[in-house]
Length: 277
Image 1 (tube, rainbow, N blue to C red):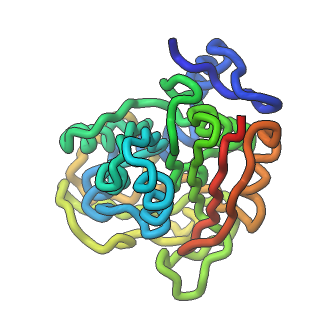
Image 2 (image 1 turned 30 degrees about the horizontal axis):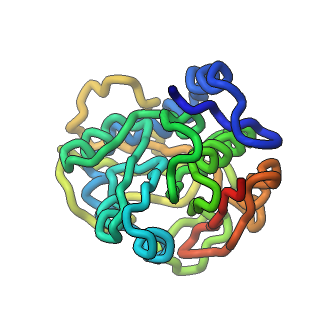
């Protein structure tokens, strides 16, 4: 059956009923300013995100290439850009995301993906050798859901399995890759959608790093856009992490999860965690 959601304390497994209740309670800010935004900008997003980041490639090389046949969960897989690297390393990837627009792009590439909230995943416990959770946590709007997301990703792993987490950092390097500057930890980051559905462009094109108080906020995203081909400014909710904050999300799992490494990479705080039992 469907694996139970991970509890906030002690060992994994808090019951299917609790997990379903959480899945039905997606916060409105995540629905409106994350899920619906990515559905609207999926095609343009796909044209600018086309390969795994170098830090992700390194993790895959160490934990998948070394063990051919590894089963890898890509939680928040987006357009599936990490999957080719997993497959090239001899692994098999299953992806999940809650943006149907991005999952449609994965489907066009023949990737194995599922629609799901990252805090309630449709997989059995203890069956994956490794997991990726890349640029997902900074879209989660509450501390409780962030802890649940971390626990749920770790629940999927077999004992000895490892997961890589990346989340946007508040501390951005001057002149760094992302080009972002954050005024506070909870921000709405504008994304300028071009007219039409074309691909291409710079990986950071059209994105600013300041909160939405810049004066050109678009109307709230609805389930249907009256003119999806028109140019528009969308705003993505992000919670950016202070140094050490990402590590603390694993504290309640200390009975069965350990952090193997924590570091900063290209504007992100990162954690490599292992399920120990």
